Length: 249
Ligand code: ADP
Ligand code: MG
Image 1 (spheres, helix red, strand yellow):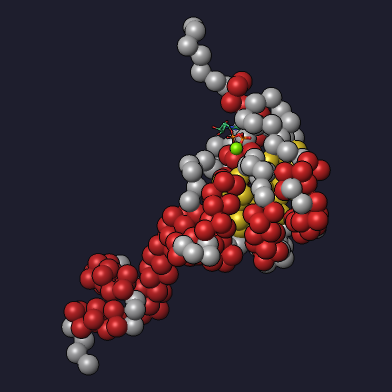
Image 2 (spheres, helix red, strand yellow; image 1 turned 90 degrees about the horizontal axis):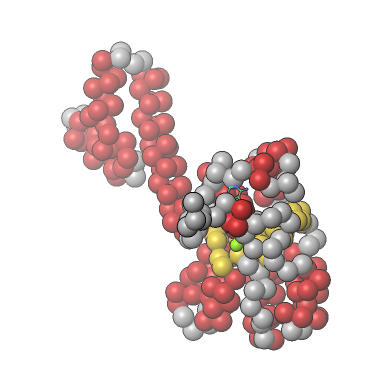
């Protein structure tokens, strides 16, 4: 085997170390300038490949998550939200709940920051290497409805089932018929004890029954959702209203 730089790059590509293959000339030059030891050189090459891959994976996961917008937990002003202490926020951020397949229920009227908090949590989870999916309730229902005959919905549904964290935004905003409630139950049952779910809703769980139509299914869904759950009741004044821009000076 020839040891010219191009041959090395070729070999690296063959071994699927394509990131470091591209970067090799620069890394070799730096190795000479900095007089890296053999050990340091190998370390730099491998670390470069790993970091690049992590970065690319993260970008891919971010794209898959389909967040409607990106607002982080850092953008979330804890002083504005009296129902959540700084200590609780820190505990949510460390993602132990996700590791243990806990669900989060974010309840409260419109404008109190439920969606923002859910997205922030999703972004944090992606940062820590988890696979996340964000779904407005209406979109989830249409995916479930069409998954049997649309390939695109089938793929999306498989992706949802594989996610570590599934965010369902504005649960029960729409009333479901029996068939839809059934499909929804099957998904929740699949995710149960396998993934975490964040649900946001402006209705409390005791009102979900009537929206789901069928009391039996509602009970079965609630049973799984609430088995391991942290409920965050957000009843502050609407952040949106309080901080709205006015046309009057
Ligand atoms: P909800 O989902 O409860 O209706 P949103 O999450 O959509 O509310 O929040 C409404 C708007 O107010 C968003 O732009 C959000 O970023 C902002 N917001 C709400 N609460 C906070 C907060 N505590 N800190 C910073 N921004 C907030
Ligand atoms: Mg919302």
